[in-house]
Length: 270
Image (cartoon, rainbow, N blue to C red; front, side, top):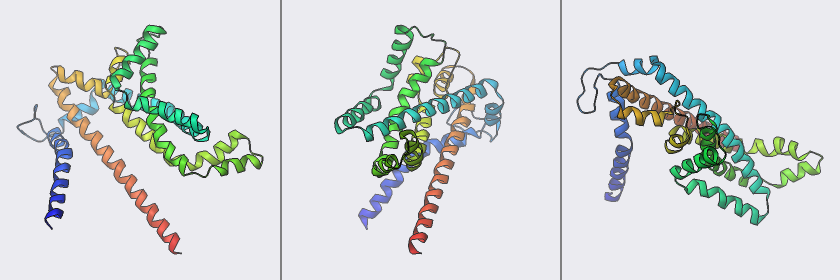
């Protein structure tokens, strides 16, 4: 009984540690307070500022466009890499998996600086272009997309692809008609993970972005150093909106999974 109570208490403390700061920030986003510590009156001023300030709108739209574009490229490369590793020989597959772990373990600041040196210094790509930024985010996200797709491929029966070839299908058709439909959940998970990583990145964007472009992370850091109080407090509202969107996505995903499990159980009973 005591052990069970301690476990519940420990779980409660962990949840408070993770979510209480976010909840406090969410509460202050609905006030006119300019700093955390004293709540004045409740207001939607921060949300009005967030959705009516052109500078903030451009920053959010640019960040989302970058995340979606980089995630699409990274998911494609990660999926192709995972399929190639699965159908390669044992040594080549082991080599690909090992090389894929390097960017995952490597520090983001090293990746960002390396991309900047390679493209801007060595290849003379303009620092004002978006090529280094997109390349850096693709480099960040592709290995994680690879890791998300690989478990789904390993669950697949590899003989189905070979059977399709024996029945006359071309390699490309067998890949698109047989392999890809079976790994779609992994591809979706990899894409979602890539979007999240791109939205969250700060170090790679700092080294590779054009001077006139800001992501949410770089903008927040620069705004906290400035003197525009209305912008700072509007970022509280932005943080709350992002948190609510993430919670909604998780809830919808869990409900869909629970519904599929329930339908699977009914089908098994019948």
